Image (cartoon, rainbow, N blue to C red; front, side, top):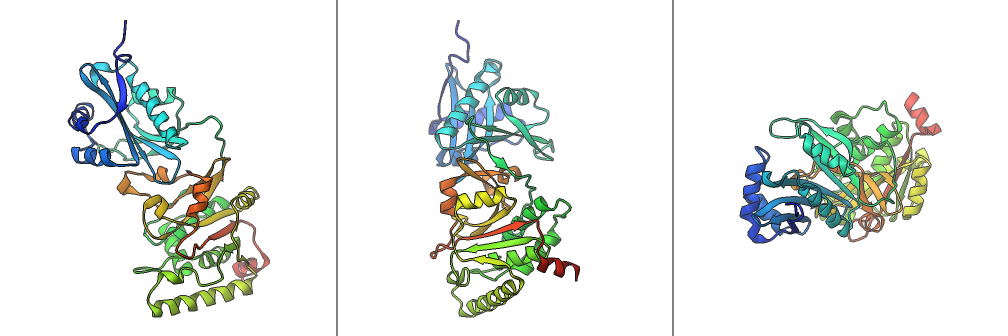
Length: 382
């Protein structure tokens, strides 16, 4: 005899399913519901999958998966099953279908959140091989905690990951200091991460390159800020000119940038900080990571966030297929949370493509290690 689960067809969503999806949402959840307007948006997104389960009575459930543009992490954003078919295995089938869809899109990891008091869902995902990797306090409308789950969608993925702490940038222009703070904390666990340090590092490291608003931080400023705190640093840039000068139209701003850069460069030379005017190949970067250096890498945020701006991330690990990064930016507008920015898996080829910025294709990496040099030891203890 066929069960409801066996008689339920799993398929991609249709535009005329909107009314049924809204009804399922109303019946299955008391709060944190997806609104009809949000459903219409999801239905037109190229970086989302909605799979539904249809039986003889209509839609019996759905699963919604979101994708970041350039990373290999999929997020199972929501799943719901009608009361009449619960216990029949439909939820398991929907999750497995979602995993297949994510893998077919080139995603290697699935992540999700589950209410701490939802024992059925906790059991479902643990039974499907998901591991707990975090807790989010006050996550739902009623202030309930969320348990974070993750699953590798391919058995051969074995990343080398550093014990990298996470710090979220609090201002749009402090990605560089925030990335540096994570590296500092990883190398020296006694480091306190707070907004005071974030802003202090920004003041020290900014090179005032911008089209408007506050300035951002370049590789030379970040390297100096780390050096002055007792860390050993190396700089890799593929261009000897002033970084980001071509992004600014104002001649007055360009002159300020030239002066700031010249002063930083003179200090770097006087301190003996190594500057390599060449690209750092990904394989060599990985070797340096294995030897204890933490790379801060300048990327173009266009490939991830569709924004034309330079952005700093910190590398947290590697494997055969991916580079893993901690990104200090959390895209709340896309429904992300903090843990979506931790150990983001980016395909190695994609990482190489995004690690250049602007018409000149600027490539910049700052390697940070915990070993003091004679010069910064003297500065620290002067």
